[in-house]
Length: 355
Image (cartoon, rainbow, N blue to C red):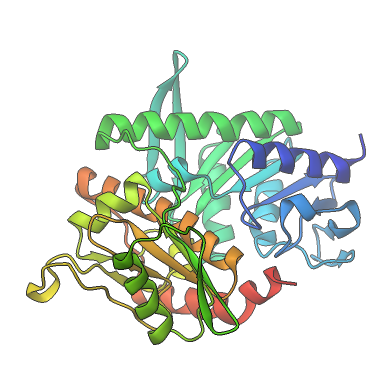
């Protein structure tokens, strides 16, 4: 099979499995000792075509193609340089492995189908940086037999000599992470997007997706649009995790890169915040989630895709928040790193994804 088409096919399989969403994650394939193919930045996997996949020289990182290579190119290069036997690499932001990798642990250990599975965790560094690539390289060299590693607070690297091996690695890692979280955090929460009452702005008027939207909820939408004129779409996520956080937490600080990028540097939750009874909402500039007591969160965006992306990321972040509270510790990201990622996403990556 043509390697470019193989990458596209694997992307579709990962998408169908829920392991790749929107433009998040990336896939690469080794052509020979000096060249790889890698997916581009900011392209939906369902829109990916062979000519969009870049060819990269491993020695000098020069590339050819219609689209710029993934921002995580350095991580892929580090993996190929550390493992000459590897031909295929998948990087995902899959939910449970990423959540497990936010708890500050050095490895995830679980019994999967009778086998003792150990997944090493590479120390955190900002996405797309040389430091992250170096952390990944050192982790791979320390754990030569591991085809899967977790980049702490970020996502996974799944490797294989063939594409099916890398795909299987991704699925096994997710299963192992679920078992780990169930054992150590008593987690039995599914990742989901459970839509409540959403809306959008059309010609200056609020259009509700459902005719039976309650008056109480309409007041929330009205307040959000009044305070955030940049917002044109609101997606209401009533997932189990979002509802748990909406009634138990007062503050969400980022445990995950994509939370900092899409949602903000932190989210205050109105329940008993500064003595209030939780019946108000907190709307802030550059914070794309608004919680309502026991009703999940309203996720904001300029487009429907933006708002829905925020809803998906928020659900994963809420699962991480719950896991951290039950585990008793976690590796929260620094405000400085979160601010840097949020600003970069708003100014660069989100615009690229809309092209």
